[in-house]
Length: 340
Image 1 (cartoon, rainbow, N blue to C red):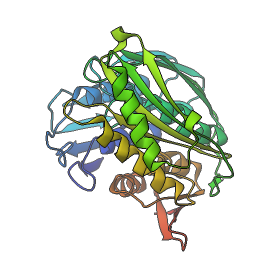
Image 2 (image 1 turned 120 degrees about the vertical axis):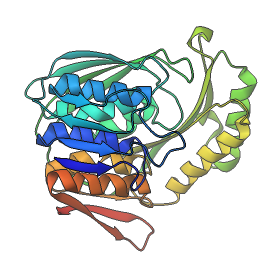
Image 3 (image 1 turned 30 degrees about the horizontal axis):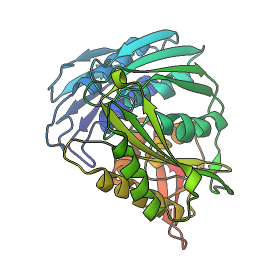
Image 4 (image 1 turned 135 degrees about the vertical axis):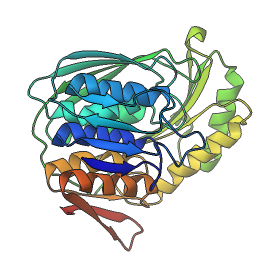
């Protein structure tokens, strides 16, 4: 039994999601206290409950303390069973974060699986669907499994109602090296609007264009969705290289000017483009679990986040493999799998 203090390190829901995945993969039970202790509103939210419920369903796990607002729980895994599964968050809670909890265990199962997850697809504090499809899954697929994802319907905060479908064909994970991006092939900025005035997207794109001044004019576009899928707004910035695609995003919020959120997203993209690292700030922690389970591998990334350091420490406790972080002269960081 591993005992986890959920307030340590980054102190968010990622610890919980990683712990469930690691428990299913290793057969090791855990207890976590002070869940999301580093957040303004600690305890389980609806999306966390759905993620743990999903882990229980696919892994025959027993869980005590599973309720919205709970500050502690115990999780005892069973055997991972592949199959067709349908999970609904019931709010705008992130479909991507639910997927994060169960993806790797199902990638290493003994038969294919199909998932339908309903909830938020474009909401704050979570990767948008485009990141999953274009950034994370192509790297995963290089490691052996075949995972494809489809966006059926967008889901924005606070309404939710989005739907993604994911097909998983398992395979053993093989170590890979992700060091070079390769040549830049395409850039794009898309303002997505649903039940929101067109002017909002137009202002976002004009602001982003000022920061990303070397991007061509035809790289900026607005996408209008049916009003019934909103209200909602997302700005998706994409830089597709030969070997990796980076996606930065921002989401409309009442009281926050469109120009401010667009400037933040564009600056983040500009920071990534100014460095030669393979993985951006959000991909880096997503790669830790599959790389550790592959037993070897290395990737380069931008400045390492507290999110990543927290996840790395947790992975080492479950699987006995850690990570070495080495700074490079070009400003990138090399992340290597090592024995803990």
